[in-house]
Length: 364
Image (cartoon, rainbow, N blue to C red; front, side, top):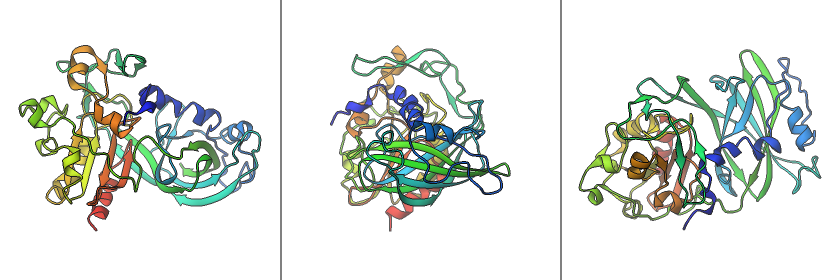
């Protein structure tokens, strides 16, 4: 299947601060004594959501891609942005999830509580060894009808390598949430950080009936991406890693998900990372788990972009497997169980522990 939602991929990342901040703008009420600037039944319209952020020193934001939350089990990911665009690294975060009215603006009080969740911090150390191509003008080429500028890099194979990010640590907070119907949903956060507690920080997102990408419980998509056999055995033609792991490059997704073993599929680009939320995922997360479980689980690394086009033209053109899987962002790591169904879907920043837990569960 061709993903119609993929158009404007990095523009879509910005939408995380668009509708999800306009209708959905997150909020804060500073309250170190345990009170709340807003009661739980205050409206979820623009005014109520905006008011909830007024006293917070950071802006919470849902990081799932625009169509990435669907009916079923989802990994909800949130980051806390400071005014200088750095992130809160250490915090205790509780999420309260609400099913909202069909039209939250017309009926801001139509709210049904759906659950309370303790969020887990996932921190990736963007150390000085993580590198990418030199700054320049990179574009995402999407079938000719969209070439929106995207951040930070003109990907060239011969470019000098530079640190990809200024911040040493990148942290997101995650939890698993079950959404039982399509529509608008609200997420309210209580955040304790720096000795202060900020309550009822609000965000709104639309949950779709059928996301373009597989979610937990869906069958994995059988595709035949490029492998070493297709490029004469040269790993540089199918991976931009400084030290490609050939064992992750020699089997197609279609072959792996049918062999009766669990599979980890990592849509990750080490060289063409475009946002702070990709980081050194392959080296820092996937590789150590592969070293532990590679004899029991298949690991596949898929470069999300056509390497030759990126190196020669400076364009980030998604490979067919990205369209077939309906991905709107990268990195995206899937764990597929022995029956060929998705058992974990880790979008954006994750850590070694989260992937290890998912792989361990797939073996049970």
